[in-house]
Length: 137
Length: 89
Image (cartoon, rainbow over all chains, first blue to last red; front, side):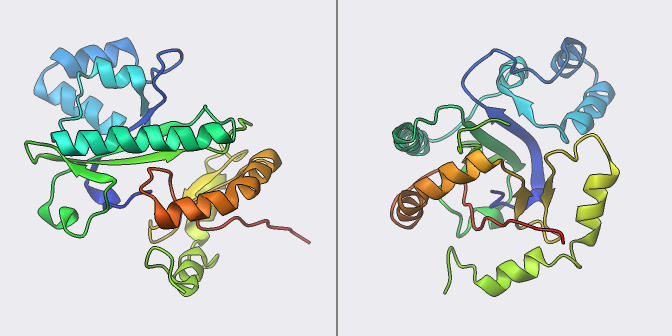
């Protein structure tokens, strides 16, 4: 799952493409990250680094996947292809896990197609579909 | 045999219970989450999680097609390298 070293990881998102029950960060912390001073922001960031965030947090934090056109196309193709495959087994309740890492050139050498650099080459995105065995305990 | 560049020996080394002693005990010491523990192996290469009997049944059913897909296609599905059942006597 972590094809890039976990030590360079900045944030993790578990995304389902829904907004119901998909927020981990409370509104107070969101406000601090959006408009707090540097010290407050760093304090909150060090807390949320250890959490697995969700869909609404992604939007609230103003995040974007800044990918090249070819990477974006590949990502969309694979998501479609995997969801078609899972549909055969009547599985729809899976998540896309996104790990965002700081960009290091070495991590992009011999990388798999699931690891994509941001266009500004400041971050690395690593994608994976998890929890696809259908049944929730 | 190598799968994704991993041999069975690599897997055994990563899963060895003695080297993973801290990982295993740390998870149960924190309480509250012990119903469905998720842990990283000591070398951080693999994640271990528990699944239900129903999830196991579904995975076994999809296994031939899942394996074909992992070998032949480009897919975001995370790699499941093994399912284990542990019995304590």
